[in-house]
Image (cartoon, rainbow, N blue to C red; front, side, top):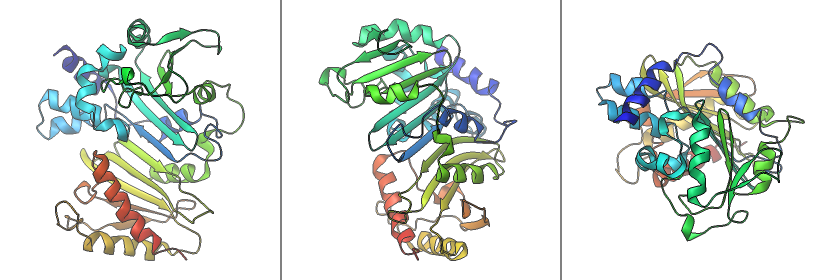
Length: 345
């Protein structure tokens, strides 16, 4: 119960109404990563706040324990969200990092690797440094200017590393490089990415990626109390004409809400694009439930055209089937790719 009480205290101490733009914290983290950390492109950007959803859950009648767990799980990257209960209960024993000490999460994936960043409360780094040697991590002080805890070869996998309560590669037994700094934990399964994440702030940064920048700028215009999670898929750009996609969980008017935005190919009429999405969402049935994917009288509606991010859609969560289950998520994106393809010029 100590974790629950501590976690609830952090929920109420965190202010959901940010003085800066809603995406300011996302931009600040992306500004720390070189634009070429994954070669020419980044495929996935996922950010979460593991505290933002707590007050909404409490307001909906959830117990304190359920609210704390729900908030933590909603702020985890997609592949870890399904392990929310395991991580909430056992992560501290595996890594020294308590769930209530995590302030934000960032996951990045590209053709050459991945990076994950956890924002942490002051003092949490000391507990992690004490716990990691008991889980096959060795401290490397020589390779970089900053100490890094490492185990296994680059991008390796070892059955001995399997531990679902370790978010830093434990789910699949991955090798790991973990840099622990005041306020942050940075993980990558190979040295090149951890070196990139710790590199001096020189040259272009991921915060300057054009499509991600456009979508985040558009998201800043939305009237939200707080962001719970943001997932950006920058798309394949000129090679395939694939639209960049943004999906966000947010708190708006004290309630749970979903937001979707796209950067569509040049020559595509935004109004026609929005209309086609609404038609497909209304008429398509979910494979599992065999019910219409849209279950709300509120339609998908075009809110405003925005330069760079050609348009923004908003809809209630009841018609957004982006669940924290990898199978359901793939089905959702399959449906999206089906009807976005029909709108290419």
